[in-house]
Image (cartoon, rainbow, N blue to C red; front, side, top):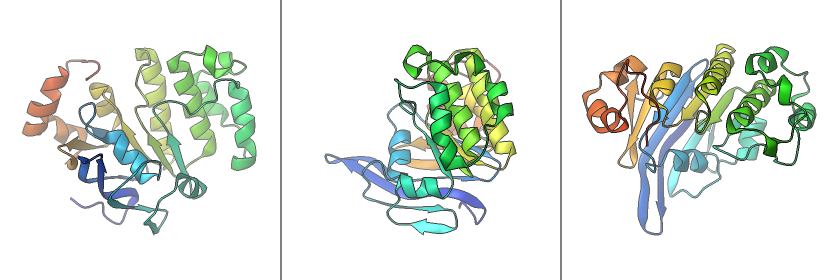
Length: 248
């Protein structure tokens, strides 16, 4: 299945090798306006490698990016961000020595807009806006990061493991924030191992295995895909309707 002309962001046919070991053979992922695409796969399969290569943060042997009505042969995060992309890495977005409010003030000149009050209220960060990031839990930091993303008003959000190492309650708040951003028309791509949570969050699913990617369609279609169930869902010990937790 091809991305089609309605894809906002496409990481197209990426290959990456490190010290003679091929991590990605030909991996492709894309997302559309107003939808959430989840890239799933076992730990170490190359999900983060694909994202970092597509954003110009890691090496690549080949691959191109389509974003904001243009093709990027040599993508760079700074240039993509200026066109409306927000990257939420698996860790390290916030400066540990700065408060949450400091980050909002720093973003002010970039966004040229007021805080998204509804986003802040929905993520329940008011009680720690004056705290430094190093004093906050992983879930609190994730909620603050998502509030910054909503305030930035991106046209595309790339979030690497947004639900990792956070409590079940924080997963709900973060997932709701992501859905809120998609409802505003943002194209969103997420990765992670919290299989049931991500399948409930996503509109579309990509499975990464063997250095390449397979487009599975909707979460319902993914859950009924025989090979995906046998090779991935069964190994995570989470099954449709089981309420399973994290896959490793």
